[in-house]
Structures are given as C-alpha cells and as structure tokens.
Image 1: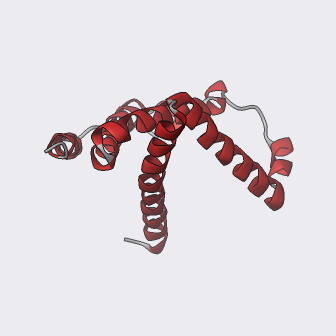
Image 2: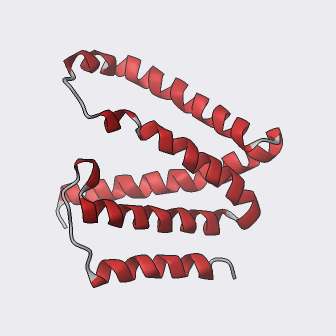
Length: 148
C-alpha cells in the first residue's frame, strides 16, 4: 500500500471514530431534550457554526467565485446528513452504539456497492464481484450478531 493510500485510510478511520463518539452523544442529547428532531437540529447547528468559522478563517469562501456550472445533485448532499443523524439519535438509545453503527456501515456498503455498480454521481462504474457481495453479507451478519 502506498503512502497516500495509508493517509486516506487513516483519515477514514478517524472519521469512523468521530462517528462512534458522535452517536452516543447525540443519542443522549435526544433523550435530554425529548426530541430526535431537536437534537439533530442542535447538532447540525453546532456543525454549521464550526464549518463557517473554519471556512472563513481559511479563506475558502473566495473559491466559490471560481466555481463554474455544476450538476444540480452536487447541492443536495446535505439532505442525507439529517437522515443519518435522525436515525442514529433514534437508534443508539434503543439498540446500542455497536448495533446502530454496524447497521449504518451495512447500509453504507449496500449504497456504495449500488453507486459503484451504476456509476452514479460522477463515480466510475465498477462491477460487483462475488468477494464484494460476500463482504457486504458478512457486515450484515455482523449486524445480526451484534444484537446477541
């Protein structure tokens, strides 16, 4: 494995660790405020403020003026964050962090395999192999096993 692949994998592992911390915090927030929707709103509000501050501090907003025409679907990625957040805030207190995040990973892999197969959203199409299908099946089996 080359050095850049190692860096990218490490970044993905760190992102996964962050999600494992975020999930129980937001689950408890949902219980504290007695609302999955309000907890999601609070969490995303904190995220927006943080990202705006970082974007302003680094001068990223200037790059918006350099952007040319873009496909419409580039602008809807934010729709899926609340779906994840609502699902996690609802699931974690009821089935636990491991089962909830295992189910999230299973859903991500199922979606990723579909996106790879059809080449959606500008991703090069990649065929589905038996090995890839088996790997997703093992993750789904892990979801079931995590419940015992």
